[in-house]
Image 1 (cartoon, rainbow, N blue to C red):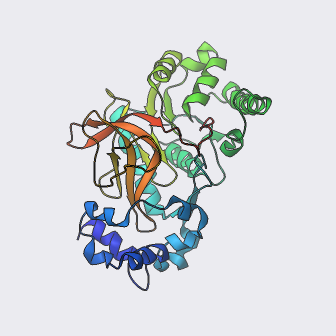
Image 2: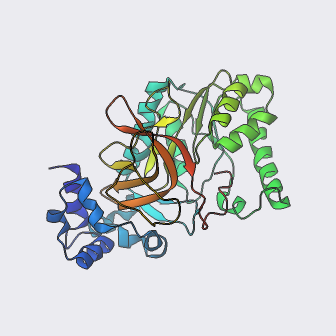
Image 3: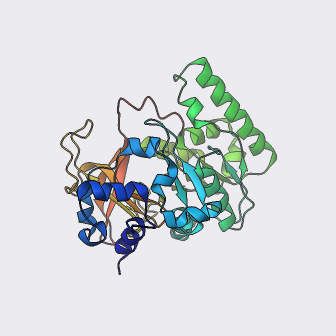
Amino acid sequence: MTHLQDILDIHFEPAGGTKYWLEQQERLHIDARHTITSIEDLSLFGLMDVEALRSRPLLDFVPRRYHDQLQQMILSETGGTSGSPCRRIYSEEDFNNGFVKPWLTAVERHHFPRGGRWLFVGPSGPHIIDRSARTMARSLGSLEPFTLDCDVRWIKRQAKGSIGYTLYLDHVLSQAMNIIQTQEIDTLFTTPPLLLLMGEHMSSEQRQAIRGIHTGGMAMDENSWHHVTRLFPEAVVLPGYGNSLFGVCFPLSPDQPDVFESGDGKRLIIELVPWTGQGQDGFVPTARAKADERGRVFCHILDPTFLLINMLERETAVATPLPNGTTGLTDIRPIALPSIKQEGVY
């Protein structure tokens, strides 16, 4: 039985399934466990209702069979860039499949240094990236990262250039520099804007001591990439693309650091769909962007503890054929939507 069929059996099982998805099945008058036989068939459900994900109780999206195991689950929230936060849970296995296994595979491919002294500058609290950073460091034989407070939702409320925005960055930077100046840091994990800001305040000796850099939270454009590699000439720079709902993806090859894998083809399937440029007008869930064509990021998250179908993300990317026969994502860019005021620094 395929992974897709296994996941459908869990979420659409009448007694132990997921309240939200059982409602959608009833709305469509189908038996999803028999009607859905391929990824393409998921288009029957239409686009994921993100507002439902933001406003309905979390357990409406968790299979009933897991409701007595909640004490073992990991809670995650999105940053709320495009509206109110979305929430999900991960089992330990789902968390490892979404964050840890892709990380360890990328570490081997890119020869990322092990056993370093990490500094993580990013959000904690409800954001799973903090737990991910701690697990990533420990998986390489390191102490968990030195960290600092970083409220990404607060900075998004501040107009760029305002007093509030400037004071916030000064506060984050002063904490980061205190750690860098006292703890012999050689591995950094943060966002591209914060990485560049820290790099400009670090001494040449401190920058040359950095052996590994992992970036996340937002894409790194070409200019930022060149700036980072110039500031940190001794570092292996390993960018990630992901979010709090599906996990993280990495470049397939060190020779193409801006070309990301499109999921694992099993629990996470990322595709690019043609998009007219605004809202959902003209969106056809069965269409796919062609090679070298820009499309909007579109994914399915097929985890036992959480199912998201036809999820339209807030980025576009260019479809790029990969040597392994799949299609990668390059030139990832955020979409300018009315609901997105600014990305902030994460």
